[in-house]
Image 1 (cartoon, rainbow, N blue to C red):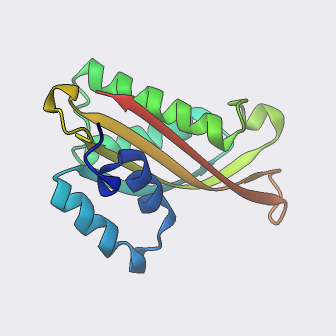
Image 2 (image 1 turned 135 degrees about the horizontal axis):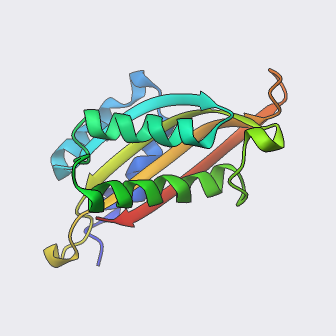
Length: 149
C-alpha cells in the first residue's frame, strides 16, 4: 500500500518536471520531508542516446544513483526508456524519423510504500516539446517511467 497521495513517486516526479523554478519550493519541501533524493534538468536532442546520457549523468552527479552499481544504473535506464515511450508515443525514435525533443526532466528516488520491504523505487518524468526540427512545428509531450531499485 502506498503511504499517501503525497508519497506517490510518479506524481512527485511529474510535478517536479512540470513546475518552473519559482514554483518548485513546495514540491522540494515535500520530497525533503519524505527523505527522497531528486534532481531536475533540461535536455534537447534528435538522438536518444544523448537524452539517456544527460539524465544518467545528472542522476549520478546528484547522488540519485551510484554509477558503480549495475542494478541502480539498470533501473534508471529502464525508467528513462519507459518515460521516452510516453514522449514518443510508443515509437522510441527521434532523428531517424526527423523528430527532435526539448525536455525538462526530473529523477526521484524513494520508498513510496508503507511496507519497507518493498524497497526503493526510481521515477523519471519528462515534459517538453516534440516535433519536426523546425522551430514552431512542435507540440507538448510528457512521459513517466517508474522502476524498482
